[in-house]
Length: 395
Image 1: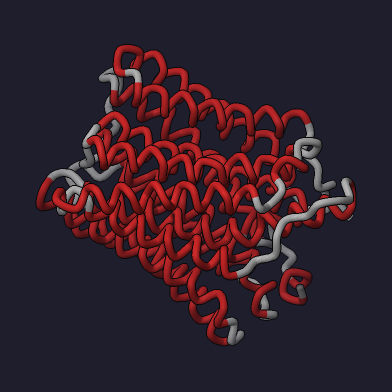
Image 2 (image 1 turned 90 degrees about the vertical axis):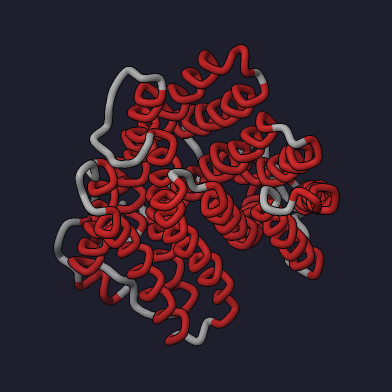
């Protein structure tokens, strides 16, 4: 807080969530606005990546680390009691993130090693910075967050290797999705019941979420094992039955974990309810992945991926960005109509994208509607929250 009070420059550099949440919101909208017409052959992006590879890389290794940076640069000082990164050092970190997005978009004709190095520079810098803060603050309980972040960085490096050697990136994509799902299971398992409990005590006294305990630890362990099996499923077809069973068990375990957090008591406040809706895509993804592995069906495979990515990642990150932005800027912790519409747009985008995977005869129409809904949702977030993120907080 002393460091933030001493900063007299632009308000956008006064807190980690400000530049990264705003940038991530715009990026999410721009990526799909470009990718859908590029994928359908209407435009061309000057990237060395094929449309699908570009889409995967920039959402999984561009958008996701941007949101992670905004969240952790804001949360870690609270966890460790150390000063936050603000001012020009924060600006330099944000510029490093932007540089990665730019070099991938304009990578045609550039050396692949250069592109890989520039894009990985940001998550490496972020990981080293956060590791220093966690260790200096002796905040050992959050080392698991750094482990999941490390797995995401490893997946990004392996992604570039697979593209260079094979022209596609199946295993690294699965590893990146799995690492992000683990972050959602870890951090979501902390904030969803906590925020729900705080709201229930204040506005709707009664049954509260269960405290974090052995069940939650077991759920995360089972989820991690199931995700590891899912990553290896294409390489180990003979183990389809046990991997599918593990995914099915993980679906049931995480569904019950969600129900233990009293989601039925949150419908009166969308800012809280959306966290539960977002987490529901985690067990849904496990269930769809189980069907895909057991039935060896590519449609169900794509449905599982987009339940986790469009639904779990898209809606959970949006929920976290809106709540953190309102809370840290002095706004009321309630969702106005515009924010509710943004939540609805991203939820619709996720459901439409899952449907597009399962209904190939309507895929083009559903894909277009999903992309439009996604763009409207994230562009709406960026426009609605621009003043909150770019201007000084309310006094």
